[in-house]
Figure 1 (cartoon, helix red, strand yellow):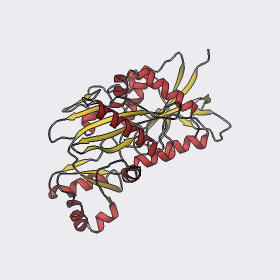
Figure 2: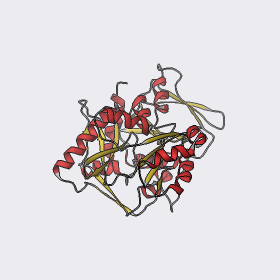
Figure 3: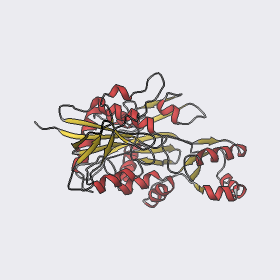
Figure 4: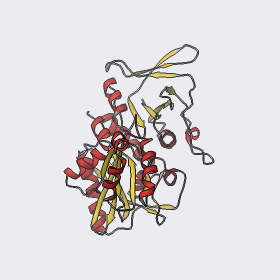
Length: 360
């Protein structure tokens, strides 16, 4: 029986490089090797596309240290025409080899991967791929644009103020006054970053400048939101074979008092717990699953997404849509599906097959 060749694309030039490697390792560990041959393509932090090992143990968190893609001297080039599905690998000794692939699984978080850029490259090359397309990826990556689209679709989102770097540099005092109207505490976030990179909680005006500076290290556009008091509830969405999005049982993040679910909490351990399924009423469960499906459709989603919400005293508020959510075995997305009866391995298989069948 012939196998399907899957190019797993991971690493990348974003600040989430290491998390992408861990996610790829998790997928390599559970993929059905009797059905799928893997071609691991690691992108170094400098942006070099390299052929790497498919040993999942190489891409795990060890002693608190996250893995990175080493530059081993190989280079991988994508097809120059949709008429070919062959990747061209150049080795340090000067030899060149072609590797035909059937589908690409881009496990890339953040800029240059989750933002529509790699999806555009794959579409130009004519290669089928797993996950959301160019528009949905780019739209969801920009928190300002995503909020506007979700709000237009009739979904509740938290109020926000968007600030550009040049605006802040020109008149920080006036902008700080506008921001203060939201009340304290506030959250300052890069508009186009993930995994809570560059996010700060600001409890008083004296902390705002440092928080803005940190966020601007990750993006030239920043959004500022008031604290939303409520439970953090997330739902995993999977594209339906019939066009109707499938949603998991929701999960809940329980964070220590006065904390938030930051990068260290997500990937290095922190004072929080993940509950799957979330302890919600049947009506609340049905509502948040419906919200997840509506948000997925609003951005034109394909493949997968995780929709993050707050359950407040006034109902659900959508926080964001993540088109390439954390996908390690400990991440919320696969855990929600496991609680819904879909194993990690089954989820990987379904995503690969959805990618193969996708019509872009």
